[in-house]
Length: 177
Image (cartoon, rainbow, N blue to C red; front, side, top):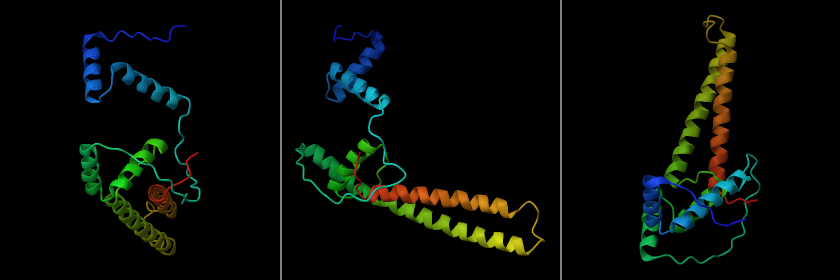
C-alpha cells in the first residue's frame, strides 16, 4: 500500500492552502500531516479534558528550556501583559489549553468570573428568602411558586459550581492523564 495520498483540491482551495502554509511556515505536505494527525487523534479519543472531579493539584515542577526568537518573546510578553499574567504563565496556559481542551483565563477573566459567581450566589440567597416568604404569605400570586424559585436556585447553584471548577482548574496545575 502506498504511503502517498493524492487529493484533488481545485485551483482556489489549493491556492488558499499554499498561502496558509506559507504564512504558517509549513510545507503543504507538513500542514496536511498536522491536520490528519489532529483529526485522527481527536477521533480516537485524543487527550481527555480534565474531568468534573478534579484530582489534587500536582505541585511537582520540572524545568524545560524554550528557545524563542526575539519577536516571539516580545509578542508573548505583550500578550501576557494584556492578559494580566507573566509570560511563563501565558505559555503554561497555552500548553494546558491544548492538552486539556479547557479554557485558560488571565487574571482579568478570573476576577470577572469570581465577581459573577458572587453576584449569582447573592441572587440565590435572595431567591431563598423570597421562597420562604412565599410559603408564609399565601397572598403571593400563584404564578410564583416555591418550586419555580427552587428551580431557579438550582440553576444558579449549578452554574456557580461549574464556574468555580473552571476557575480552580485554571489556577492549579493538575495531573494530566
